[in-house]
Amino acid sequence: MILNEVFETIKKRIEERPEGSYVAKLIEDDEKSGLNKICEKIGEEAVELILAAKDNKREEIIHETADLIFHVMILLAYKEIELEEIYKEFERRRK
Ligand SMILES: N=c1c2ncn([C@@H]3O[C@H](COP(=O)(O)OP(=O)(O)OP(=O)(O)O)[C@@H](O)[C@H]3O)c2ncn1[C@@H]1O[C@H](COP(=O)(O)O)[C@@H](O)[C@H]1O
Image (cartoon, rainbow, N blue to C red):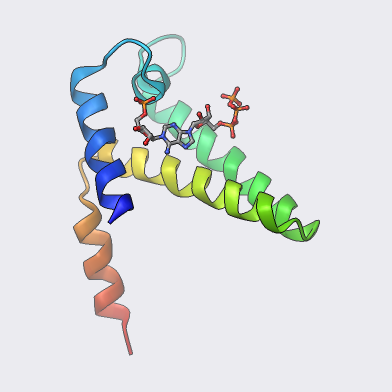
């Protein structure tokens, strides 16, 4: 599944920090911690998704949802939480 593939790439980028990588750039240490920058980005993407939904812009909703999921996956990888653990949580909630 594409989400698993992107997640594996994110984990590799966090480990290897290659030049030109968006993920590596986001978490690089500068004046703000990597965690702060990831969290800020999640907040921004969530707001952009809400605005797209309220404006009823279908393509933008799709685009912003992908951005939000992508940044949530960066947070999970950064915190060393596997996607599998999230899948299990959904399984646990299933009625
Ligand atoms: N799926 C994505 C993906 N989705 C979104 N983005 C980036 O997330 C950012 C979203 O920011 P914004 O919505 O604010 O858009 P922006 O205005 O372009 O960005 P800013 O100037 O605001 O930072 C953009 O820069 C996008 O390029 C992504 N960057 C990478 N991936 C995947 O992640 C993998 C690792 O990427 P790298 O770390 O770049 O190798 C790649 O193989 C891709 O599959």
